[in-house]
Image (tube, rainbow, N blue to C red; front, top):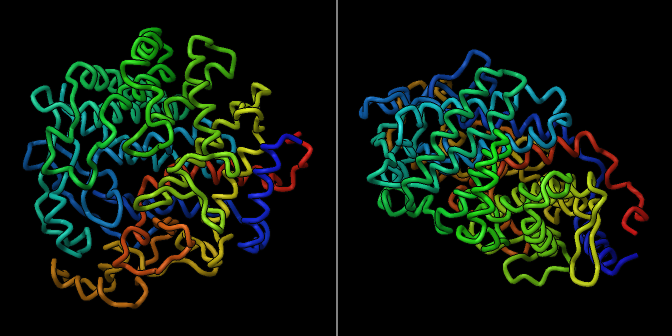
Length: 500
């Protein structure tokens, strides 16, 4: 057995022992709940089949002040602002899960497509004006000074956009990626819609590439510090081109990627993946072409992806920004750690899938790691989220016997409209924020930020938003992970010999 295998297995065994893992999880149930969470984040007019019934229509005049229809879409987290940058990334990752693991979704595929479409329908509205992308609805500072239900909110619904005079290549290219990925998702289910998504993605990417600049400069006062683009816009241009190449198979995007690989820094900041930094995702996504034997032209991206994957493997990585807690949780310095856990675990699983098809391994120094090992590391993270951790707590609301009850989420923590029909004003909601009582409305499927230190601790307190706030981009990559493990329930029991 290779040395790398021993290191990984020892780490996993120790983590499991600390957590006292208690058997098989119902990944299908967790997947169903994760999809329900997105219904709780809906903005606009809710459909008749809305299942989280404590939510009602909200923000029905969004965009009216600017003469556009910007109703719909998702609230990003526990507030009432619609941020286009993380919403587009959320849509891209939900789509990627369906694209790579569609068969594993089974009966949940249709409801997952509905969750994707709630985002892509909104992004189509936000890009309906040529050379313009509407990237935010709501004044974040005014919104964050209130604690009120989305159904009651009276803070300004200010509309923010990027255009040729105020560029935003990052948010525009991510939006193009979301539309392109969505076009693949709906290619069979709704070909006409798929074509509209792809056509719009092409237009939006052209705008992003022609008028270059970060939206954090154009709209700094509005989007910072909530969703500043700290990694620059270059990664999003490569990311958008990669998805357009995958969706359209046009040679121009293949050539764009190779021509701009160095210029746009494909190998930079490879240790991170999320709404801000796409470098690791770019390399994993493009590496599929190489591993499936379709395009040796992209061999350098596979080298980058291999190096990245090695930094995530416990017992191998010496990267200062990637650690593991005593309970086995992947940990990166910063807020909302679960966003890193789910996104990086998704890349591990996706890459393991590509490696399996190619009958390949990941070279890590003098040794190597198998696809099975990558899947086990990803599964360990999913199991930690679902309750295999020192606190025996599921970090998904509504899953398991013990889960967060005081999440940092306005709609969940305030009485529903049916329970309290009278309006609850901006400052009147403060009493509900401050109470130690559990939230009255269960935001089923919401995964919170979770432990943000290496001690595996969690306070379950509304005020500690870094740990108790859910976000759409935590859940988005988790959908593909849960779908895969729901259809491969015996992964943990696979023979250790498979690693030899």
